[in-house]
Structure formats: structure tokens, C-alpha cells
Image (cartoon, rainbow, N blue to C red; front, side, top):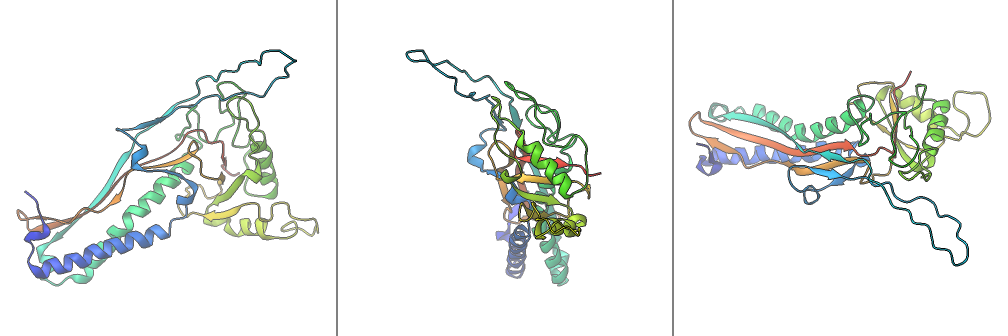
Length: 309
């Protein structure tokens, strides 16, 4: 039966306290390095009741109709939209510290283990955030049942819509222009244009391999990589976010402001580190980090993905 660290000899307890501080400090440091967290709308534990939670879609209302004097206003009732149920998944990691490691003064090794344990949880969060984009052209689906990035998204009371191009292409002025056109055509579930377009997007998410290309495109005053003296319409359009965790290096994504029905990060149990546990049966101490989280997409109407050429 495991017992708490109150059974530790004083010398062990002091070192273990230092190791626990190292775990905490590295969790904070690695968390500060995260680049994808700002793309997600956050839901805290209080907004995820029970074992899972569901977002229910409604079609909304259409535009107003012309009404004559004394005529009754026409009625418009929303229809059921697409629901999506999100289930928190538990992630954890345990490090086992032996008494021999304490006794043999292996403080550097123990400190390194604590450092790595502290980095693991926030790094895992970034991997999970990136996975939504990495799988967004296939297995990661929106509430309508199709891939997050698709040319055939469904609306319950309106035409289909697309948040990926019919013809894929690497990042360029031409493919950015197509993104602006495609996103400008998106309608809400009742058929009203929601005016996303490039102006409604905030970030460009790319792999490291396209960082320099992106900076030329978004920071050049004139048409980049050209002798033209025309103004550059993409200058300052989007803020660049570079992730080392994108698996397709020529895929790129545009992301709008966080929205509760778009890109979602649910924290059923935020990252925590329970008190170290002592086990006298094998003279070891466990240090654990765990979390229960959700990452996914409901609609995806403020997201655009291009898999690249």
C-alpha cells in the first residue's frame, strides 16, 4: 500500500521537495513556449459536466422579408443542426525513483528526470493541439461528419460550404487569394453570408519549412519575389504561427479568433501533479503528472486548411 511522503527520512524529503519544484518550474517554462494554445477556445471543468459534453447546432434565422402595411410578419423557425459529442481523454506519465538513487547521491540524474517530467505534460498538450490540424483532412471530423477541412461541409438549412480549396497548392499569394475567396463564400446554417474572408482570419499556421516564405509574403511592401512595384495585398494580413509539430510540412492553415463552436480545447482536469507517493514494498517513490482534456472542432467556419501541392 502506497503512503505519502510523510514517511520519508528528512534528507530524502528535502531532495524530493526540490525535485517537485523542478517539475513545476519546467511545466511553467514549457507551457510558456506553447504556440498553438492561443488558437483554441478554452472550456474549463465547470463547462464540461459529466463524462462528456455535447454542442448542439441550430440553423439560426434567415433574412427579413418585405412586409406590407398591416401584414403579419412571416415566421421563421430554426431547424436542428449538427450535434457533436466530445469525450475527455486522460493522459498521464509516472516516474519511479528508487531509494538507491537517493542514497547514491544521483542528484543530477534525478533532477534531469524531474525536468523531463515537467516538460512532458505541456508538450503533450501541443501535440494534441497539432493533431487536430494534422488529421484535419481525414480522420478528424466536424459535427457534420466530414473532415474538418473539406469542400463538402453540410448546412442543415442552406447550401454546402468549403474551407479547403478544390485544388491544393503551396503557400503563395495566389493560394492566399483563393483562401480569401473561399472563406468569403461561407454562409451560416441559415444561409446568411458570415463575411469571414481573409479579413476575418487572424493567424497563419505553418511548419518551419515555410517560415521564410511566409515572412516574404506578409512583410514585403511590394509583390514578394517579383520585379513588380504593385502593392502587396497580403502585407500584414495574418500573424505567423510556426509549429514544429505539423507532420505535413507544406500544409498550411488560416485560423480566426477563438470561438466556442469552432476549435475547442476542453480542460476536464487541467494538468496536475499529485503529491509524490512512497511505496515501502519496493522502496520507491512515484512522481506523476496527469490531465483529462478534449481537442476538436464543432463547425470549422473560422478555419481554413490547404494540404499543399
